Image (cartoon, rainbow, N blue to C red; front, side, top):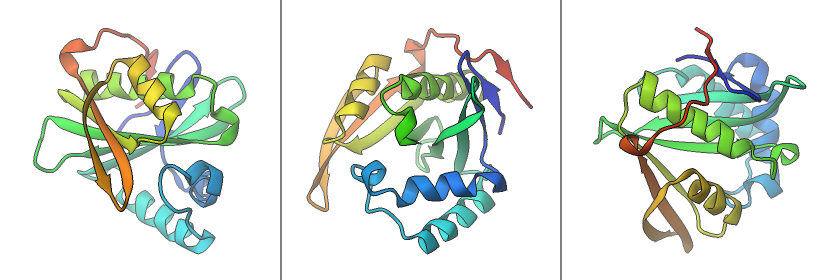
Length: 178
């Protein structure tokens, strides 16, 4: 699992120093409104410990997104390797309120896609999100994801979209850091 940079971001593996960021994101009712119920601080700390322990293992990788200009940690993104499809990964992103609406997800997710396609040699990226999350719908469309399906789970409509490696043609990563 590598750290890497883009023009505006540093994307590095989750570390023990990131507990406060993790907990603040997953306990914030407004940030979590389209993801799931917010966690209690105790549950968030347990989830962080579990995520940190499993980070870099075979099925999940989690990175912190840092704004280069201020060195402020502004979000977290995750890859989950799809068990029955060794050539595909699912990704997700969660951002601080201050990073929302500033083109951060387009740059961060696109860089992660480039990492997945060029360094890890996967063929397909999948994203699943609450259909009410219009910001996510806009940015995945802007990046070029195609709508695959929708489904209902626990009375919530979800959208599933994907992006094939053969369509990738961007160079966003400026440096791989180990």
